[in-house]
Length: 222
Image 1 (tube, rainbow, N blue to C red):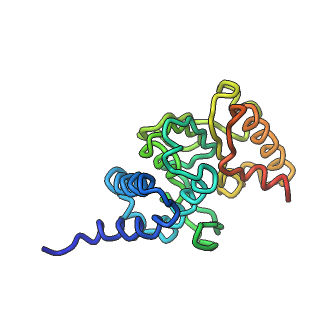
Image 2 (image 1 turned 30 degrees about the vertical axis):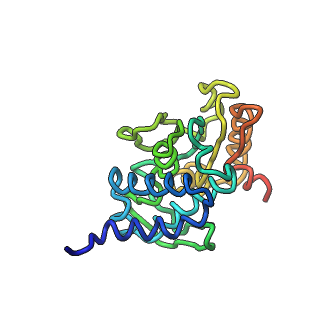
C-alpha cells in the first residue's frame, strides 16, 4: 500500500514543530491540531501550492511558544486576533516572516486570494481548545471561531468589545496588507491607526493578560 503524500507532508510538518514543545501532552496537542487543519482547511495542499504557508504556521506556533510556554495553557483562553486574515485577502509584494527556525522574506505579487493571509492563528487556537475571536475587514463567514467584520482604519472600531475581556491579544500584518496600505498610503495616518490599536489592546486585556504579538507596537517604536 503506497503512502499518502498529503499525510506525509503533514507528518513532516509535525516532526519539524515538535521541538518547540517539551511536554508530551503539548506534542500530542500540536499533532492533533495540525492534522485537524489538514482535514478542515486542506493545509497540506495549500502548503504545496503556495510557498510560505508552512512558515506562517511555524511563525504563529513560535509566538505561542514564546508567550505561553506550554501549549496546554492556551486551552480555555479567550484570545483576540486583530486583523486575523480572511478568505479574501491578497498578498503584498513582499512579506517578512520570522519563524522559530529562521527569517525569510516571501516576495511574490498576487492578484488574487492567498492562503498566507487566511486566519490560521484563530483556526489553530480553535483546534487547541481556546476561544479565539477574530476581527478583519475580509470574509470570515464560514469560519468556526467567533469573528467580526471590522474596518480597523476607523477610530473606535473595536469599542464594541468589553473592557478587560481577553486573556491575550495579537495584531499581525495589518500594516503590510495591500488593502490597508491602499487605504492609508500616508505614514502619519498609519501611525494614528497603530496608536488606536495599541490603545484598544491595553483596554481589552485582562490585568493578567498578555500581548502575543503586536505589529502596531513595533510600528510605533520605529
